[in-house]
Image (cartoon, rainbow, N blue to C red):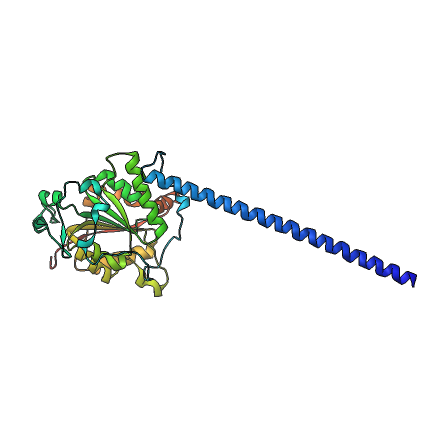
Length: 332
């Protein structure tokens, strides 16, 4: 009996030690979890603080610098066929471009009445330049500034910043579907305007879906240049309808582009490059721009060097495939 009691006592003692060890392990685990959560919270607060600082910079704060991309990272691509929630004007006359380009509208007298453009100067946009493009008269452009360049899927805005310096008198807008990325571009532009007074006043960014709403922003024959740099290839055949270059979409682009306007496309995916080129070749309102003209075009060099994606391709010694076409008149 005594031997049996001793055995049970030993077993009970071992179980008690195990319980104590388990309790200690649970306590340590809880402490580590609390510490990790606290660190995560501090990191989030620090990140939010830094983003606030950059927002302050963009809005004209005392600090100097640009927003950092790492605080605005998002998925590489977004589904253009999905429903997104952001304001879209009913027609181009409802677009308040003064909010985007305040420096260009200080002397503007154009108004919007009953949902239609009220200035008579818009009727002057019929004068043709030497290359056949329909451009507005200088007086009309002065009174009613209009966006002339559109960077569709502008990413982090590298091309816009470069073009702003090359064409300081042209209004240009980047169109981006991803909200964080478009937010970054807006703050970047604001920060550049603060850092360089009088510069970068001609660029802005919209969060919108260019596959659905381009005619809501631009009038017939308004754009002189459109850029499609390194678009989503949508490799699967069932997703080819999501590609930004297609016969249906080219009809829309032709509508909003001026005669003589240029459409620029570039990609590092050969199959997509062939797709875009074949679609442009098949469309009756576009013709390829000659190599001699491309050599003189200041925008061509920027296609592969201005954007983050283009720089990555260059670092990896990748090959690019471009297709650059001009909008022509029907039956030309």
